[in-house]
Amino acid sequence: MMMAVDLLLGTPLLFPLILTWIAPVLAHEHHGADLSEEQLHAPVDAILWIHIALQAIAWGVIFPIGMVLGLTRSRWHVPVQCLAFALTFGGIFLGHAHGGRQFPSSVHSHLGSWFLVPILAQLGLGIYLKLHIHERTLRPYAVHAHGILGRIWPILGWVQGLFGVITLRGFCGEVGAGQCAAHYIMGSGFIAYGIIMALLLVVGDDWVRRSGRSPEWWDSWVIMLWGMVNTFTEHHGGAWSVKDMQHTVLGILWWAGGALGIFLSRNNQRNVLPGVIIILTGWAMSDHVQALMLSTKVHSMFGYSLMLAGLARIIEVCFISLPSSPRSDAPLLDDDDSEHTLAPSAPKGVATKTNTSRAFRHLSPMLFMSGTDEELAAVHEAGMDHVTYILSMYSIAFLLYLLTVFLLHLYSTSGRNAPSMQQPNVVFSADGIELSDPADASKWYAPVPREEGRSAAVHVLGEDEDD
Image (cartoon, rainbow, N blue to C red; front, top):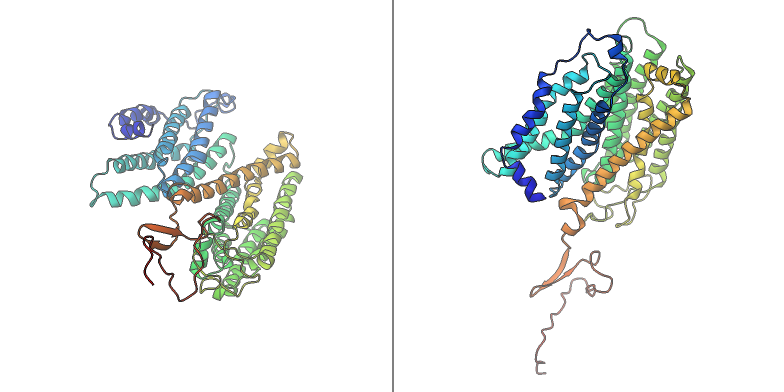
């Protein structure tokens, strides 16, 4: 299978096949204001649902998995990405061949056309790299470009997917555009914040230690920078409404509290301020009165979730030690492992499973993103109560977080990071015989401890020496 895929990538037969899929897309005219009410409100046909399913699977699951496999230099990177590209081109074709409901020109349709540029560029770079030519001239630059494009792939998929949902549901028109932008941008920022913290705390604990900075130092920087953005983007001129004032003062709270958190985290010290900021934000959201009772209850649940998350963070900082990675070579209290923490360091070799629980607090942004007036009005008209809607959003959030931690686990266990690829630490070698570190060796076979400062005598098998 691997050889077949490599041969396919190395032949020019792939380009005509791709062009046969792209030609109808380029020739397709995006609909404008000439659509009738019947076309705008017709049922969604099966072809469009298949388009949605294919693109969601390709961009939401397969491409991120292939990206991680590429980062770890896994041999499965190429076949997985080939499958994702095949589903993508098939989904693009179906997206322009569907019947049933038609849609006016939108950001989703225009971005879909522009996305062909990075798609073809990434595919072309992948084919070029498989040819293994220009090793000392062009190839190093192609490797960097391929890596950069691959790393932004999940962001491209997330943005286009959001615009796809907006287009399908008919949300964010001229009246609700501002509120949609605020909710989707801020909600996406919260999710990105959670993913960044998961990266730092699940697979980046060794890097955090080597940086000489506590987790709250990095946490406070993210809070402060996002607060600066939020302070100047919530009010768009005119009279100040209660919501404008609340949203703006939340931004001020974040950058002011984030700056204090950075200062308190100096010298690698831990502090509870990020958790306090999360609790205060949750309290504000829990009392954020809306026009609909359904909307008020959704915002309240969002606030309660944030307050619970902030409390969990404070408990973690105060009572749960920061464990070291089993593969870490750092001593217990070296320059990068601060003794100025609220909880003592854990013994070396303690599993880092508690790290995964630290990022769960960022599940609640799904409620925030789904709390616009248009969305909740549609839910209200459909006869759904707040309990069903809130649990549905939490289910989606759990699946998103499952995908995130799965990708982090895949990064730690695939390719060059696989346990089978890790070389044991050799502590003794003589005549081709090696003894590995006791941490890697069987409990039945380990080197005999030797006295410090003395080398072990080597006994040569053979005739006994004369006295």
